[in-house]
Image (tube, rainbow over all chains, first blue to last red; front, side):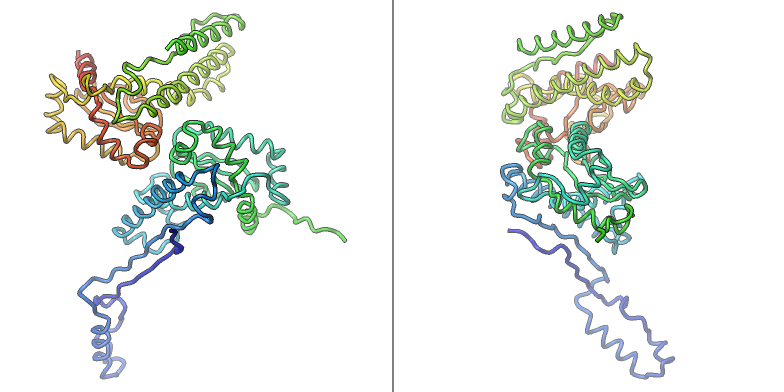
Length: 272
Length: 231
């Protein structure tokens, strides 16, 4: 059973008057003798049990764009059930618990929340949970049943331009996954400043949003991502990801969107 | 067992060969995988045989192998005066060397329940624990809390700080050995909180692994290290 909502929001308007800006004094200014009475009436209407005005905004667990057994035999249903159902869900729930206690972080979008809680290298406690929620959403969408193969058209051309060949890119990506120390992620990103694709390794929860680079695909190299299926064989996991799991469709869409932010040069307009 | 000693002999032979080929014989001392002081299934049901097998023969051995490889490359680079490569190799050496150091301590930190595992500390260490942490239970709670809070991969340690003359609970990230945190810290007990240490058995319930591991904790070894480091 999967939950479809990615956002749910509920507000409690209490009697503290945060939603009402007029007081009985101002009613005299407006010369509406019954205004104060109307205000009181409205207050009583909205007043439920005595609670202070608190707005709760929660993040929900977004389900992957496929069933949990859809990536078999390359990523088992058991792994998806643990990884998404326990780890990813845990990050979401812990983030919600933290946000409940922290009014100043209310109102940020997920991207902004990550950047703000990263706090320029001195991360706040919410960072780990927020970033990991985002990272896992991005990771599920970086894979698809029947994935692998090769990218086509523009994305392939850009990879060939920036890495020499697709084979070279694939080799470098897998090498990055094998040389990461500890827990972390491997990313294909579009570097904003250099206007080119690059492979990035990050530790723990860190992601390219921090460096304002645009992520195109990611591979989770935390042990929990592959241990049940591949034990300590990181190489096999990374190769299987490249051969059977990576969604070049998702990558193409992200690349197209990225080009709204990064000018990669003149479009190739076919000449009649 | 025999296979492991063959592996280590090969490594030494290879490294010496390299040295001779390049014209200098630097007595390169490579590492070898230490044997487990007990059988692979001896820590059941707290730590499964499958995990012990993988942890020792795959993870630990890989650290040893990669450390030796890095050491050989370092030797070559030092001989050539290639400072760039020497510095570049540092992270590999710290990671793999640290992995070997930490796991070597870890195997000694554990003992089967019939052979002292889980028995509370005695002697000076017990006294120091009670004095500093009020009780053994409170110390264990502290270590478990630090382990649970650790994000990513790392270790939790009970250490003796030689400079301050007191015990300390410390965490290190990845495979950083305790000395990288402070040179005067002596590791008494370490708990591996890398996911590979518990995942197959405890899945994501790290807390259960942490609370269970005390049933096979070898406090006698910790006590011995403590006594030695205070002398």
